[in-house]
View (cartoon, rainbow, N blue to C red):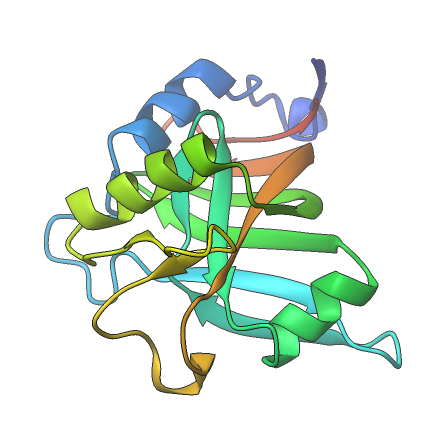
Length: 174
């Protein structure tokens, strides 16, 4: 991993990636009483090159983010054409922007693991009988009918900004 301390000129220490990954593993919310504490934002690239940003029910599992969507959604069409994407969220005392390429997942074991992670978080997802993706009794209104495609983000980089003492801003290249 390549680490660049973007706060060095201001005398800030580098951010500890292991501490941030631990917060992601724990499902850390920005604050105990934070509104929309688990909102995760996915950015994809529209056909004209402009950004498309949308809230998404991403889950952190096995050291990366996973998300699901219908094939006909804008984000689904975008990552099928151009896999570059980013995920942004806040955890306790830090903001994280995670960049990479969305790779569609169809391997049954991986689908089962990520469906279990979503179910453990309160969304009763499970692998679809066809093996193409996942299904659940409900989803966001614009996702279209199941099965929904699952994507794993192959990490490229992350930028973490600490919002608590001692502060810091660090870029990690994986």
